[in-house]
Amino acid sequence: MDIRKVKKLIEMLEESKVSEIEIHEGEESVRISRHSMYTEQPQTVVQVPAADARQDLGSATGGHSDKMETAEVKQEVDGHYITSPMVGIFYSSPSPDKPPFAELGKEVKVGDVICIIEAMKIMNQIESDANGVVSRVLAENGDPVEFGQPLFLVREA
Picture (cartoon, rainbow, N blue to C red):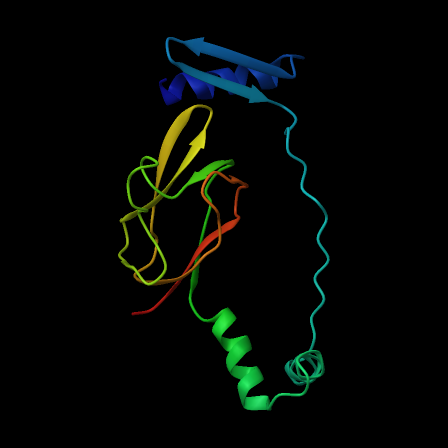
C-alpha cells in the first residue's frame, strides 16, 4: 500500500468523527485508530546512589566482595540492547527447521538480520543496529513482544 494513501487516510480520520478505519487491498491491509489498543503501564523509576546499590546487592547475595558485585552490575549494563521496533510475535529463525539468525555468542554486524517479528500477518526482518557479539537473547521464539522491548544484548567484540 502506498504511503501517500496511508497519510491521506490519517488526514481523513483526523478531519472526521470516525475513531477507527480499516482498509483491505488484496493481501495488504491497514488499520488506523485514534485510540491505541495498547495502553502503557505507568512506570516508577527509583534511583539509588551507586554505593547504596552495591551495599543492597551485597546483602541480597550474602555479602560477596564489592569487586565481584561491581563486576556483576557492570556486566548487566555493558553492551547495547537491540529493541523491538514494533508490536508482534518474535521468531528467532526464518522457519522452524532453520537455525536462528542470532544466537548466544554469535557475532553480528550492523544490517545483519537478527530475527523476524510478525505483525498483521507480515513477516518483518529485524536488522542489528550494532556491531558485536550476542551476549544475551532476551526473547523466546513465538513470544509476543512490545514496541521498545529489549530482544538482544550485544557487547563489543
